[in-house]
Image 1 (spheres, rainbow, N blue to C red):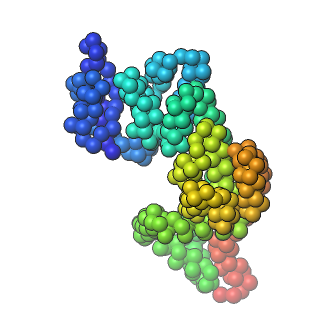
Image 2 (cartoon, rainbow, N blue to C red; image 1 turned 180 degrees about the vertical axis):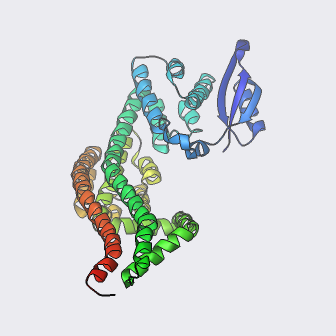
Length: 404
C-alpha cells in the first residue's frame, strides 16, 4: 500500500509533519481528518524497497538497528512510568533517521487521538513484523507494555547476534572466492592469450588443453555480454521459480538435505521456531495464536506446514509434538522434549532450553565450517590457476622435449 508524507495543521494551528499509509491521496486526507488534522500538503513517498535497492543503502544504518534501538529505549521509558505518548515524543527527538522519525511521529499522533499502539504499528509492516505487533497487542491488553517491549528487544538482539555471527564467519570465504575468481578471469582473458601468441609465433603446436582454454578465453573476450546476460537471465528465472509454491518447497527440501549445510540449516530453523514460540508464549499469547504467528515467520515452507498442522491439532484438543516429528525437520529427540514440555506444563521453559542448546551447537558448527571452507576455497582456486599455468607451459615443455 502506498505511503504519503504530509504537512498538516493540528489543534491550535500547530504545523506537523508525518507519513500515512493509504490507498490513494483522498484516503490519506480522510484518515488525517478523522484524527482532527487538516492536511495542507500531501505527496506519495518512495517505497522502502526502492530506497533499499539504491547503492547508498549499503552504507545506511540498517532498518533492524533502528527498530532494536527504538524498542530498547521505549522499554526503558515505559518501565520508568513515562506515558506512551511522552515516550514516543522523546524518541522522535532522538531518532537521527528522517524516514523512521516520520514513522514514529505518525504513530505518536495516532495514539494521541485514541488509536491503539499496535494498530498504529500495523500500518508499518516493513518496520514492525507480525511477531512485534502480536506481542504489543498482548502488552497493551495486559497493561505490561514496558515489560513486553523489553522482551521484544532481548529477542531481537538475540536474533541479530546469531545473524551477525553467520555473516562474520562467511565474510572471509566470500572475499577469498571473489578475489580468486577475478584472478582467474584476468589470467584467462589477459595473461594467457599474450603467452599463447608468443608460442604460436615460435611455431609451436598447441596441445588440446591449451586449445580448449584459448577457446574459452576468446569466447569470454568477444562474447562477455552473452555470458553476463545468461547469468542475469538464469538468476531471474531461478528467483521467479523460487517464489512459486513448488519452487519454495523444492528449495527448502534441497537445502535441508545438503550433506554439511543441511543439518546446520535444520538447527537454525528449529532454533528460530523454539525461541519465537517461547517468546510469544512468555508474553501471554495463547498457544493457537502463537503458532499462527510462528507459521508466518518461520521462513521454511516445510516447517510452516508442520506448524500449521500443529495448530490444527491444538484447536482439536490434540498434541503439537506429532506433526513436528512427522515434518522431518525436527529430530525425534527434540520432538520428544516438546511432548514432555506439553505434558508437564513447562513447554515455554523447554523451548528456551531447546533454543539455547541448538544455538550453542550451531556456533560450534559454524566455526568449524568456516575453518574448513577457507583452505577448501584456496585449494580449488589453486587448481584452476595451476590448470591455466599448465596450459600455458605445456607447449613450451613439449617444444623443449623435441615434440613439435
